[in-house]
Amino acid sequence: MSMNRRDAAKVLTVAPVAAAFRWAPESVREAAALAREALDRQVPFKPKFFTAHEWRSVRVLVDLIIPADERSGSATQAGVPEFIDFMCIDDQSLQTPVRGGLAWLDTASHESFEKAFVDGTAAEQTGLLDRIAWPRKAKPEDAQGAAFFTSFRDLTASGFYSSRMGVHDLQYLGNTFVPEWKGCPPEALAKLGVRYS
Image 1 (tube, one colour):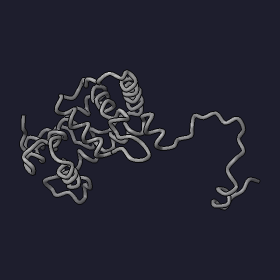
Image 2: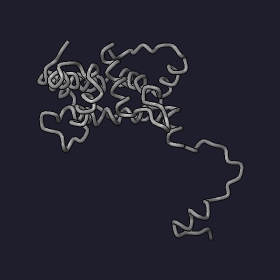
Image 3: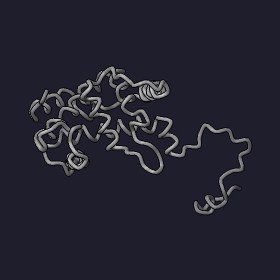
Image 4: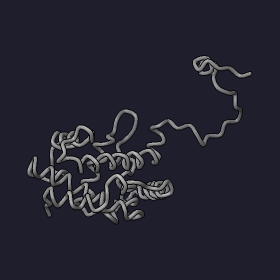
């Protein structure tokens, strides 16, 4: 099914994108836990919200946002698509903006490259995302896509950095037993210009 730009814009304007992409911390915690469970099962995940085409698109999109590098794996390896699927099931206000934004990407891709976003080359995909990556620089006709991408990027980052891989990537040292607290290192105190009294 193909949708023209006008139809995609209508879908996106049903609920303001920025307002619709707000989520509660407890929803993030719950979705992150469910995504971890899905990854731990080692069986192919079957999305409950996304269609097969949308699922492929989400997996490509999140990995373009957070690709694997020398420090950690990609967003898909961290379970971000599963996280987003759980978030959309848990919070129905996300459903229309996410689905509409994915439709916008396909529409813009069809207009530019005559194929769906997921079927484009890496250069075509990143070129399209470069058009909408900076809302203030986006052309007026790309404003809806830019609003979607900004919010979807935030959702992707929330999923990644609430995953085991993302916490490890941050080199988070909290929740670790410290048998003896020796205080702040002297070098750090000196850099801050303070000292213990």
